[in-house]
Length: 421
Image (cartoon, rainbow, N blue to C red; front, side, top):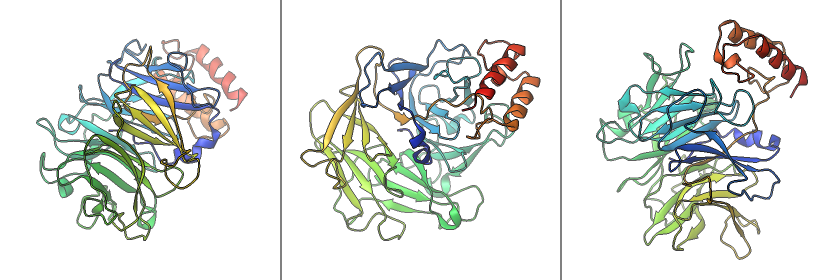
């Protein structure tokens, strides 16, 4: 999938001191942080590319092979990704605030079981409460399913009984591996009673489109009768011919709207914006789907799109090994007018080997805010730190020494706690 980013990142974005992106690189078996330190939207490779997670990580976590789906939780910068080679779900978090997840305790294999749920992960998303969901596209080793993952016993993984539960399964997809090919997922607010709405991008013959799910009866599933509907399909009245694609992305500049990418007949890369203008629960009506970008240029293969709160959009080009940025200069709602800006943000040259999945990243967390509440460090952070320190939890190794938490970590914690955020 692309990266399903928690929509509340739009609220956190004004606090960013510099633009930070995360890129998965299956050619280098790595995750990169891309830094636009001076706000020019120009990220040189290698100067602006920082290892976030590699095979050299100090925790000894198994390397990634193909993270084709990941999401970032805005509240605490937890990153979760699904690997389509290993079938593992990975979790990363920069605990010591140094900008990577290479240190002890900062990376782990978060889920491996049941293997039928993670044979081919294509989508990852967090809801508004920070709960994790992973979409799997069925194949010979797995079913079409969207699962919710919950670490019930707080042991750092979701491999225990009851920690992986179906959220959208055979109630919508049917049994096993049927006609669907589910891809990226994302959540938006606005459902009845304040419930979140899950959106799914599907890419398979006769079923291309976007589907909408709401857990109306609060039974922790959204595939009961009446809980799902077609949001966008070939039956649309906007005249859009649908084809293959993976990305679905909230429009951070237009709450409630969604972007999706597709590669149309003739190798034409297209970006559409979907908006339910009349509030009927779909974007099938005339004018509710708008083509905002299109290119038929040779050597361009779009994979992922990321919406930026300022209204611009980033697209990864896997053939050109680059990230482009689109700016609606004339404010007509598209990126296709004469004068609209298109620039290369990054072109792979040295460190980066593959350009596919992308996400916005918040600034590294303030280490003094140990419980990641988002506020000024307080007594609750002290209590949380000492609870971990007394349990010899590696998270309390705030100085990154790699050993059992000790007095040096206490000193480091209080130095940062006293410094505030």
